[in-house]
Image 1 (cartoon, helix red, strand yellow):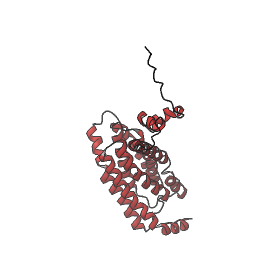
Image 2 (cartoon, rainbow, N blue to C red):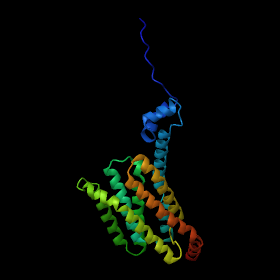
Image 3 (cartoon, rainbow, N blue to C red):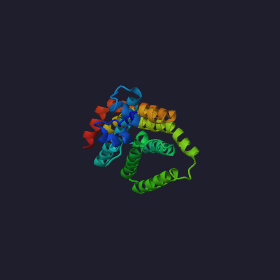
Image 4 (cartoon, rainbow, N blue to C red):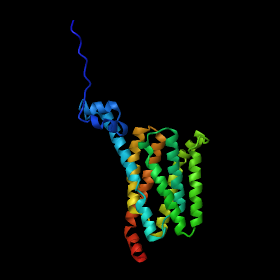
Length: 254
């Protein structure tokens, strides 16, 4: 009686990259579909890869998304046109998203930019106070904020508080962005607001609508990004509208 032959495992030329691909871009089932069966039109797998790729791209972009704003403030040695209250509300929204995502064990690719946005937004808040002549208060602001973040991430904070913070994101985003919109309108220009930062934030929040639905399935997070995109789009429109006025102001400052 013939002995049945054992089926050899299928291999692919992409196997050296398999660990990297499985860690960051796709589950093993999608790896098999793409690189073993060469089925590159599998829609569910394409959605997963697109979402993971966008998420990683957003995180990489977020590392420097507010750097142009920070450099612009430091170069001008002025925070004219930026609202500290708007920054505080933005920090509330970012912190809520970060703590909610960590508490729910969402993948880092679904929320990682919040960490880098938080650090850069805190720096902007400090610079606003520093260039406004309140350096001591700025240092105090840093200490209080990071103390609160440590408390929120600790086991002492109940999940109900974390969920309440995430739910408060929507009004915080709306009010924070409207404060900036009103400030821009009242000034007749966008002051030291960085166009690069504004447009990158707008593009990132748009992409996050898709990735939050795909990777978390959390409607609260998706709705937060829908609102954030709308508000960021409004400020981006103001940057375009006041472009000539802001350029004139810059020449006068120089």
